[in-house]
Amino acid sequence: MAPRTDFWAILTEPLIRQNPVTLQILGICSALAVTTSLPTALTMSVSLTVVLTLSAALISLIRRHIPDPIRLIVQIVIIASLVIVIDQFLQAYFADISRALSIYVSLITTNCLVLGRTEAYARHHAPLPAAVDAFGNGLGYSLILIIIGGTRELFGQGSLFGQQVLPLASEGGWFTPLSLMLLAPSAFFLLGGLVWAIRSWRTEQAEAPEHTPPAQTRATE
Image 1: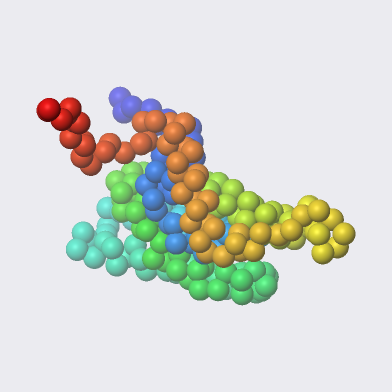
Image 2 (image 1 turned 45 degrees about the vertical axis):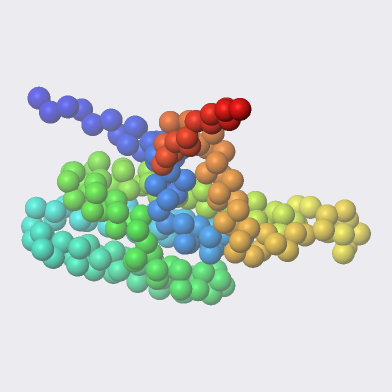
């Protein structure tokens, strides 16, 4: 009798314990580039999660019929086709956000998270577990983007989803926006701080030191 698949564990592991961004350091380019506001972060998160889930399910369905020498080409073609559909949908119904995301939706095709999960998991598992794994990794990716995007928009503009939350000093309030939060380095600092916080909390994620410093010896007189 085949062992029962634990779908709950597959779904929830990528949220914190095996998060693709903070632990595996995958997909960080978009995490740094499109998180200036919550709408762009959320749109990018949904787009990548949809592409990742559908591509994993499709590749798993045909995994036994893909010749091994061309498997990467087939996977990229499937991913790119889904990305084109998502990009056209955004351009048609969310034109402003599509312009704000610029080329980064198209670059989902080359996102190492998408290709990594299809190559490492979907190619070796049935469609349902593959889709659940992909969806869980999409949620883990989305969680990080939403945290960073919300923090940058709140402290960089004093708003969330475009709605003013903190009263601006220029309008008689007390909050002065931190312009650094709207620049790319702030996302790098926030992501680094988030990685540090999670690895301090879950110490098993901390990497072993590459070398041990030599023991100090007392100088002989």
